[in-house]
Length: 316
Image (cartoon, rainbow, N blue to C red; front, side):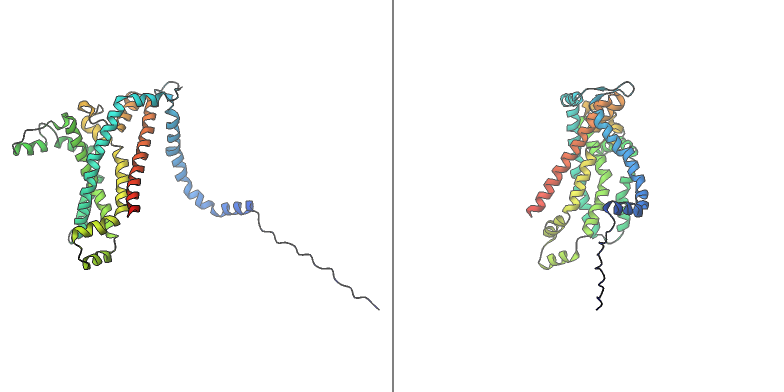
């Protein structure tokens, strides 16, 4: 009787895929073209963005005149900054100019946007006209407004004379300087914000206005109940951008009243103060401390604006 031979059971060999390291290398090889295309941005950012920021932080704790050896001073620059009355004067001027220019700019821009949305003819012409001041050279505008507010031959004083009102030395008085600078800022940025608000208005669904009209809501009620709530993200954007720009005001006062800030240093802003410390006094360590303080102020005011608008949105 012959036995039947049985074949040995086959041993299952587990299938092993590529390791995580192999998958990563394969992914890098497959996407290297994309990394290569993006590399110029990161190189430029590292050279002209990241390195200057890190260098400014290090320089803020040193004393350097731009030529000699650097000397570590710790928190000396920040202590001197806190005790410097010119810095607090420049900060006060910056906040005052920010309020005098930003609030009218955004209010006028919103009104113009609502009017432009309801316009039927020449809408494109209006848009181009509103945006022209934003692309005009700042230096040219500062020279122009310096002439407009000139004491002897300025347009503003000519209008005052025609009305029998005494002339004013606009660029020789503290508040006159602030009025002249803020007027220029309003004229420059009102058109830009108008177009932003107009884009936000056009994004609001028309059926909401139709429903409000059916319910008998008037123009004022519709504006405060529909338009403003729907525009809240756009308004937040313009407020943040205006805050960042307002705290960096520099060209306007420098061209109109000079590096000294004019009478009583009423046109001295924190950025102009930084410019004087760095490029006139050659105190780069102190200027770096001023730059960091400006950065902190921008973050603080931006966070406050964000919190105010976000809190109002959550309350509703």
